[in-house]
Length: 552
Image 1: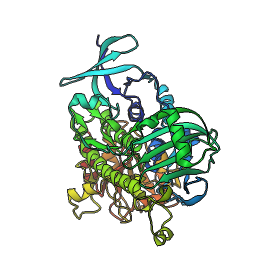
Image 2 (image 1 turned 90 degrees about the horizontal axis):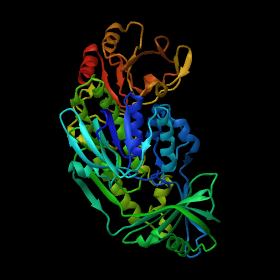
Image 3 (image 1 turned 135 degrees about the vertical axis):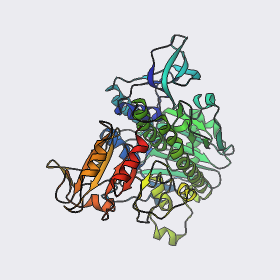
Image 4 (image 1 turned 60 degrees about the vertical axis):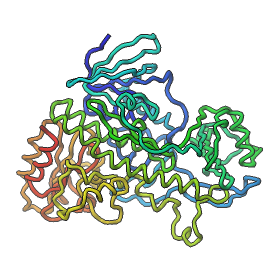
């Protein structure tokens, strides 16, 4: 039996599929989410949330719920062995900033169990009458010119059925079937000689203030951090180089190993709520789509947990694709627009994979007693953060699409080679003081709209382009720009005339003019629904050129 055609079917109910669904319903697109699992995931799993992801959560309207439950990334503390109680070093995994810059409102990342995050997103999806359908396994895909038919096996009834949709999103993880059905390659490496065990377990006798580390040089490292302030459950990791901990996926073996490895026989364990073994994998697909099928998240790329990029990259995938898919489904854009998903995301993920693989090697190989980073004392004095050298990239502020053919840039006319731009797709241009089309759109607080204080992030929407027309003086003509923006399809563009003392949006504190590097004659910025700058132009012609590339 084939159901009535729907716009989008999403295979996989993890973070990638849930974020994709939420972005789409925010764009007015109906979806179904199907997952082969019999129950929702438990366990902290991918627990790191980067600052850039907080920004996307703000646009989606879930940030407040997330921040109520997220906890700061704890300070690391390594202990001397044997004994396991005498600290030998204390340091921050990331350089912690106490300063909130106007253009970057979220100074540091945070930790939140993946299971908790998924629950938050599911709650928000329920407001749109969308729920994850469990025990539904994708078995085959058939494509035609106008739709895709997905074949499913219902493990509740042991029956098969079909779903006809305009598009299918594969968000079914690294072991998912969507990628395999498409015949996409999964290029990269698996560290067969290295193993990891991660789990969540109640521990009595361990302090809550630190991310605790014990290690045997060249063999293993044991880590434990409190999952939430109101519990005694810790997220525990056992990793190593040339180390096979597969037997530690057994609860009793894991507890015994932790006792012996830490020297802390005083620790008392409860039951593991989650325990899993895996080998570090660093792989990505050769392309992110085939016909009417797209893949996002771990189905498209997997990486070591070092750096906390996995779930965050999945969110970026979904943000990039959803608004484009919505415009095509509404008949406002050509299907050709969808090719930009692959064009824009492939270089970012390739560079991210390279960086996190290098970081994994650095972390696993370059350790002293107890897993301490090997830095010379003078280097320690110069930098408080272990990963300062990679901080901005890990926070995902540097991700950009300057190389995308969709981008229109009129402020900087000096050419950049496509190869060089793609090489910086992930790390960006930190410290160079430039802001170009394709970059992340900065925040700007201290704005006044209709007499009330607001900020740009409060105005950005995942379903609309935002035109910021900066008017530095009263002599600036506004009619032409407003006419071009007003000619776009209804409900797809919102326009603000930004001035320091008048206009629809008053830049009272000057942060908008400063963050967007406004110069005389170059004063129109368009921010895409995914929070990236689509164009920086000086004229109606430049603005029209950009929107002609979006709408058809």
